[in-house]
Image (cartoon, rainbow, N blue to C red; front, side):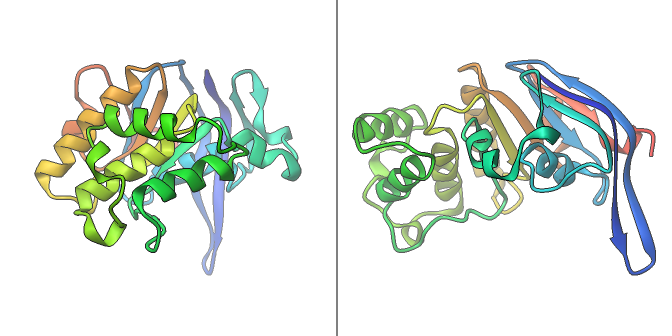
Length: 218
């Protein structure tokens, strides 16, 4: 479970402080698919970055699986992040590595070993329907295919939580529909999905819950 309790967050700007959240509270159950919507500046990406511990709230607490993540030390942040998969709008794939090697690096970067690597990669690529792309390089893939590889990379280590920031922002409509379908497939495996999106139609899809950040008390 993810619990935001009375969270306030602001940023320093040239004109003073810009308030993003004031006394924001919300609960996300295990296995839920939550879509964050709202205008630019409403705090969609900030919420994801707080969950990832890239930024800290000014006050309030964020609890993940019963642990106050504000108390996690800098040294322990990498260990905390092992349970979280992340997908960004920009693909951030290593261009001179094949799809297979990009996934191997994702496994090793989180403390995994070469043992069982091939089986893990084959399984995830097959689930996402891109097992034929394992030898390709990112430059040889369409935008939709690259985002599927990013999804594979995000879930290769069996995270409990998947954070998704505008995953279809750079994609054509057909690819966007496919990525949304695959996110539902991933969620059906029991992974909690928290997605920031401007796509209201995607937010209203069956099985998803919308949190409209334009309507919170700020």
